[in-house]
Length: 174
Image (cartoon, rainbow, N blue to C red; front, side, top):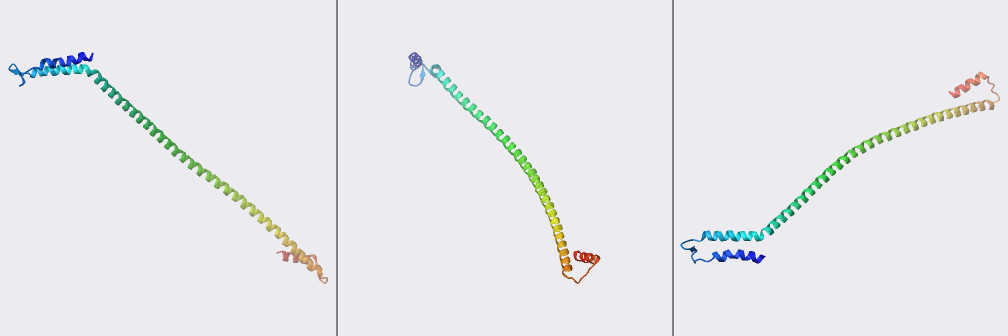
């Protein structure tokens, strides 16, 4: 099949190639004949390899289109990842603000609890101190009374009336 086409390709070259050495044929130029030969040659050549050239350029166009679609897909994925990362950053920022607010509230609660515990401990210490003072006061009164009584009973010569005894005790206690 290709031999036929090759023959058809070379036939016009052989037929119209005869001429004189000066490039003229019968007193005129052979420009038109050469142009005609070129057109026929180019037509046959196009007929033989047109499908291959079309297939080559179609394949190349398909490859370029495939690469372009891959790049567009990667670009879409990158934009989606960027948006997702921005959303995560925004969520993290709001979570951090919520955590800070919660920590402040918890610190306030802990401060209140500690202050309440300190106030309770202070009240208990004051109550304990008052009780201790009261106990010590009673103890001292007993000691004073015992001392006065011992002094009175140890001296036999002193006869003291009850009123005098009460006055002495009041003076010692006061």
